[in-house]
Length: 238
Image (cartoon, rainbow, N blue to C red):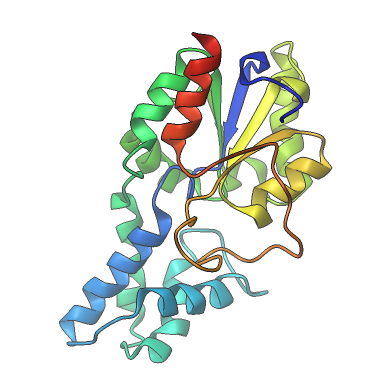
């Protein structure tokens, strides 16, 4: 059983892309839209595998601007045209990426009890679209543009800790909620945070578009949906 009840937290910090926003569906839909123009039948999981390799390379740029570069690199392996204009289209399409079906209602419910903090490796321009799609539920938000670094760099988390401390809280008041073992769950454990793994790919093999962790971290809380987390919190607080 988790060491701390859900009712004991003041803050819930969230990974956004992949936990709240359906990153894999948005990326694959964008690639399929391009593929359809040339009559190419695109394999979504194959596309995610190629994306993962290209995205986590030494010459990677900030996300999602980096999608323009990534597209040109992975297009030949998918039978697509490596046209930079198509890469720009894929990048711009991020503005329309949708939340998971349960994200908006779950966040609205959780916001009634907790202060919600967004922690995203996405750039601020993209987060603005995600925030609007999610119903603008956040008390505070930290993007790669704000922090100058990406998770799993502990420096990203320390900026959030400083913000919470300025409000009179501490990291003990935070439950960190995320789907990525690599970007969030492992490092949050190292930093002494209580964490909650939202296993969005519970019905699919592998890590999809997200880099695999060096080792699996058993989370403090484990749900397969945001709805389940919201239900558990309501149950404790009833």
